[in-house]
Image 1 (tube, helix red, strand yellow):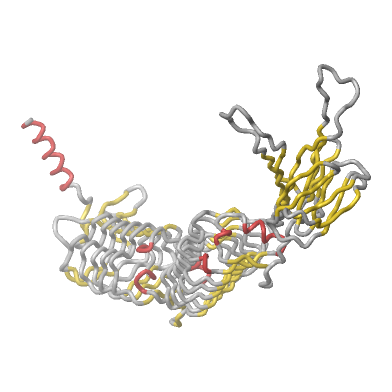
Image 2 (cartoon, helix red, strand yellow):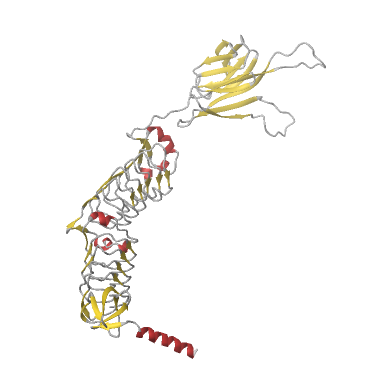
Length: 540
């Protein structure tokens, strides 16, 4: 174990001893002899005072070009008051200026990459990131609590997380080209300096009315997020997707114009844009997910090609009063698309031919009312009440509304379990039926009673003193003041009597039917006499 400890200690000492290759004029370097390049590094003593890094130096007859500031090179050099870097520098390494306290630094115009935690805790008040920079690694400017102004000259291809975390003194982000800025993509809120600054400037003039040029074809994630200085936004047709969080928490946006050509609005694209009161999406938009927590949004217009509305698309939009959806086919819609938006108090406007589809679709059916696009209530169509007839041993239904389906039920009070020695049978079927059809209200229920009455007994061929009596099925239907008897023979006398024996009506059957018009109230009991047989019914 002791030998192992000694070996580890020896390795550590070797590493310290070889922290740099050479020292020239108080600057420590690691060199690449074949390339004749050098990288500034840390050495035996911490740097202090004013430091100037040369673009090149000569060592033992060879000229070396200084191309980078290595990892930890000036870390915690708190007594270093100023540093000047040459234009030959292309890389600033990890933690290169970590914990330094100088009040300013100029990043050279040829720097391409800035390492993680490079300027953590520095005290400069402004910083310019030149157009040459293509990579910002994690937490580059973390805890630069004196930083007020950030100048970003171009498009940065890769921006890691937490780049400006805790830079809460930031008040302004300055850019030169809005098209180049639009391409910047931020992996989280703290990587975007607008998280703290809130205000974007181009050529020292604040951007309040943003018109994205039609040369822009894509927006970076969260590119304008947190920019509360924006008042209006125009998005051109060249942009197909409004990306995740692109304008999230831009609480000052009052006017939004999305040009025809935009196809998709991603999650959180306009999250919590609380000054928006109206949004109109063009017909080119097919997918929507991005207006949650727009708490003052009152009117929404969706074009006629929207096919998908994703999770929380309009969640917590508590003031929506009118929602217009021009697509005839109900979009595929997440169940929480309108969560906490109180749509049970809102009006949905849809194409007239699609009203019933939306009324039967989740979550659309939860709107308080569903009307046509012009705001009128569609005329409610109702199936006509069916009629019931009985011919040739078959019950038949018909309806004046074409293409209906019939829903019927037949009950018989005789069918049950008995415990008596004598049973009296009513020999009747009670029939109910209603008609249904898509986009129609179902009809009123029609009812009828099918009963059997005895015909004249057979007088010939009597055997064992038993005469055969034939039963005739008779259908009785009462609709309002109309009583219809069917299934009977022609030229048969049919009469209706009140329970006190007063005759109400009399007719002769024709074509197997007898009809009566009466002024009887519903629920009145009457006696229908067919030939010599009597039937007691209740009007309905």
